[in-house]
Amino acid sequence: MPITCPKIVALGDSITYGFPYLPDRSWVRLAADELGLQMINKGINGDTTWGMLERFSADVLAHRPSHVIIVGGANDAFERIAAEDVVNNIRQMVKAAIDNAIVPFLGLPTPCNFAEETLLAKYRQSLRQYVATEGIDVIDFYSAMVNLVGSGIREGLHVDGIHPNEAGYQIMAGVAVGFLRYRV
Image (tube, rainbow, N blue to C red; front, top):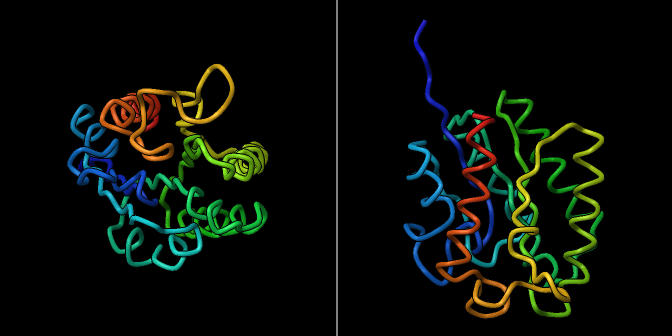
């Protein structure tokens, strides 16, 4: 029987894309290179979890991956989308993945230095509750990026209070590598 290599789609927004850089400097690319895995970056700048759900078929199912990493919420917070709606969008993506024999992983949104962090915190709390009941593994990008004194994204890891800089993307890649190394 042939051995199949894992293929992972990373679905998300600008933080998955690698903004303000190009995808070749994103956490997705850095993790793929370190692990020697095929990872497809489907991050779109400005996207919400609703947009991710809308493009799930074309950007995930069409690639027939073994795994999908779903990371979103920052733009939802800036659009003031209710936590229930964000979790519902993610729940539908997880169901579509499972229905298509794709293993879903959820990435916790990174922190930000704006008032929207309050809503992002609600998203993270709701996502943690959801995954705990469903037995879905979580990649905790948040804890690696949060300012240990106060809140928001740690100084020296961002370019604008929300988007990671190169050091931030390297930390995110390290978190992803540590997580994926034992799960794919």
